[in-house]
Image 1 (tube, rainbow, N blue to C red):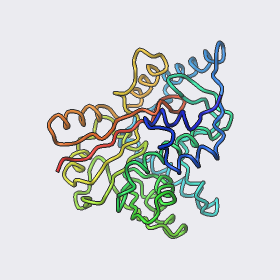
Image 2: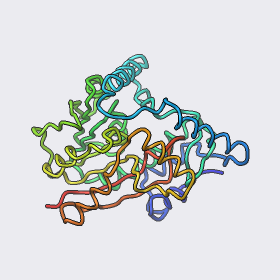
Image 3: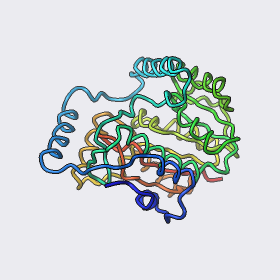
Length: 308
């Protein structure tokens, strides 16, 4: 079996001939073959997921993990330096090669070890084309190594980019990326739990988070209030969205158990829907790609904008 352009188009909710050129190129260049596990092989995956959720290894997210985050992005910075400043070395460690993935509410065994990354790249390119093509600048909050912004600069050149993160090592990495790759990008410190009100957004600026806002759990209120006040043109969050899982599906149910064990982003989409009912925001789209890593789907998205 193999993921095709038609499969991606269906997942994105568009016609195949409406796929962005960037997506078509990524699909053509990637090995997207996979097999469906069955019988004992599928049981072993289910059992490993259940054992992991029931163990003490999945720790709760939150600001108490600050030292872990700093160590993670410090290691990523060193990896970038050791690799001779190659862009591919910016890929964060949470994208683990060689594991089973989630696909259409079941598990899949990829033929290529970088399958998760390659599918993510196609999904990311679709979001960039759909929501950021007209933006003058894109600010990614929780940017980590900046690998999303490097991809954005290649796909949609000429935009001013800003990578914001709590980690000082992440800030240093983004500024090193600027100097090494000659990209118009700036690294800046930012704390989801204590947003910097002096940082202006406004017309022409788009906001991005990818697998970052998940770390705040239920404490998304201050960041959301900041965005409502600053009124960027559009906000796109590719994050695990608990509201989109189907609790009557076994694989989804396990993802939700893992999501709640980690304390990932909770109630964010529900809050946006309530704000839309109050006419304070407009939700442009909320969608699952029905794709994720072994334990959960971190690549669903919601796009919205504050009301004028």
